[in-house]
Length: 363
Image (cartoon, rainbow, N blue to C red):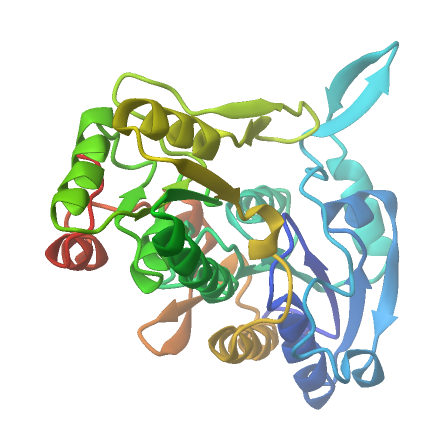
């Protein structure tokens, strides 16, 4: 019989997003009903390696439901299996999992609730293989985590994109311009797809569908023939044209995935202006998509995830991740969650709907 869980560690890994605090609150408030105490680990897996944490009680989570960011801090550079250390002016990668085990034992933790996206779940999977009890909660604005219908944070990011497109629609129309909006998403196009549909984009460019420059220009000319002298282009940061590669800002060797995406919006804008003659501007939303209060949907989803994670802990459901299935939260194996990225497909209903209302994907 599994040991009864009395003490839980909770951390927020990877990039921040709206809803993290709602999950922390959803974990902390029910914990006392199960006789559990909660230790908040600071700055994601960095705190787990370096031994930085603080006790969390109900008083600490009062009023944080609608608060953006995370009261625990986060980091996407703290992978204990890929720990960067500077030696003689060079970055050397070390394995610090033994430090994690020591801190886990010193804090008397029975389980760790790791809130994060694909990277966090991969680390959680590896920690489970090292013998630690881990429960996952799926977070990412990118919505690219498999085995769950939706991650929290995505709806809030889509709201930001749709609101931006609403505002840019009026200025694009007034000046008869093409406006390109670059959004996040890394290798998945869900933010661009959903945000583009919600904001009335005319062209959506995503990583999953390599686009043709000529098809993009064709859509803009087609709109002009219809008397529409402006266009909105929503482009995901990982999108690329046929035969081309993703546009990078650079590489950060301290991260498990060193690629720093960015710059595709400027490239698209330059090419559109040069090849259509239409005045073009670019807006990069960047970290606006990560900040601010969560939408009501994300507040509810985050609270559900947090409370369900405590229920999982009470039943010793380790090595598993809370997942949205339809309208209910279930649990799936972390192995299943990280087996593949959840990417947009040609037969995704949202793609078919977008095409039916005249949105071009440049293909």
